[in-house]
Structures are given as structure tokens and as C-alpha cells.
Length: 275
Image 1 (tube, one colour):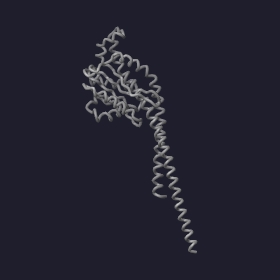
Image 2 (image 1 turned 120 degrees about the vertical axis):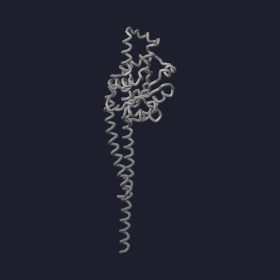
Image 3 (image 1 turned 90 degrees about the vertical axis):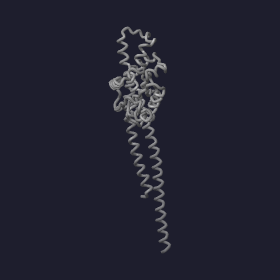
Image 4 (image 1 turned 60 degrees about the horizontal axis):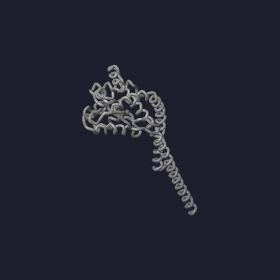
């Protein structure tokens, strides 16, 4: 066997192994996506209710600059899912350009690895071990408690995440979580007819982890669908490459056989001529 045939055969074996891996990863992602989609459908109303509440308290740019802004980049620790982590990190990083006392909270190692080059001095909190298991309200609560312990609870929060729309589409979005001080001082608070001030305090304490949990579920679902699509495309590309390599292998093998036959026939003819 010629060195060219050996090289093609080695490459063919390598691509076939990669295709097996991508197909397996697609199957795993499909199973995880089904769980993430079910979790999101259960959590959506839970998060949208809090989102509607905060939408009533628009924060002016001057107020954000005065109070400071905390940008949460909601990603995970795992890659191979297209650009879904990049777009979230880009959105979170863009929000820091407004000036003032701005900070970053990286939910997931991917956000940290992307943002640390431009905003290393702005990263106040980084959370790892995200994405290995489905997100829970307890996970979100722990992140919020840790952020509060760093003195970030008195600032307006911006949560950057991917909103799941379909199995082949997601939309990079952001939620503005107005600071408790701005809500208490807002003239729009009367709309809710809150009788006991303690109820408002309790709700504000609950709503922040609720919104973070909701955004983690949205991003998780978007990530799994994106990874499933990426692995499906990778498997198709591997299949096309295997076809081209198989064709090249067969052509080279046929050329080698033809060359050997010509040499044998030529040798036999030369012997007959001598006789």
C-alpha cells in the first residue's frame, strides 16, 4: 500500500471516529434539551410575572450612572454550542460602556473566559459549575446572596441571557432589575396598592433570584438547542468528508492497481518478445 493510501485511510478513520462522537453528543444534547424545555415551560410564568413588575419602573440613564450598574452574563461552563455564549458576553460588556460604577457578574466559566480580556478589573463575582446540571432556584438564590454580600444589591442589575424561541432560534435579550431604592421612591409604586411595606421588601428580595433563575433556564434551553444543532451540522459535515475521502481512496487504489497491472502485462510482453 502506498503512503498516499495510508494517509487517506488514516484520515478516514479519524473523521469516522469524530462523526461517532458528534452523533453521540447530539443524542445527549437532545435528551438534555427535552428536560430543559420542560423546565422552562414550568418556570416561564414564574419569571415573567417578576419581569412585568420591574418593567413598570423604567430607569433613566442618569439614574443608572448615579447608582451604578451590575451586568450579569448568564452562560455556562460548556462550549460546542455555536456563538450563544459570545453574544451574551458581548451584550453584558456593552452595558458597561455607559460610564459610572459598573460591575460584572459572570455566571459560568465561558462568560469569564470571554470578558476577562477587556473587563478583568470589572469582574466582581464569577460562578463556576454552571450547566452540568439543570439550573435550580437554589442555585440562583446562592448567586444573588453572594452578590448581595459584595454590596451589589443597592445597584440596578442588567441580566443578559438568550431567550429561547425555537429549536433553531434564540434571541439575545436583557432584563433591567431596578434597584430597591428607585422602586420605593418611584411614583409608579401606587399602581400596586401595597398595604404592608414588609410585603414589598419580601417581594423585592424574592424577585431577584426568581428573575435570575428564569434567565438561567432560558439560556440553558437555548444552549442545548444550539449544541444539538451544532452537533447535527458537524455530523453532516463529517459524513460529506467521509464520502470525499472514500472516493479519493478508491480512486488512488484503482490507480495503484491499474499501474501494477500495466507493469505485470508489460513485463510479460517483454519476456514473450525475448523468447
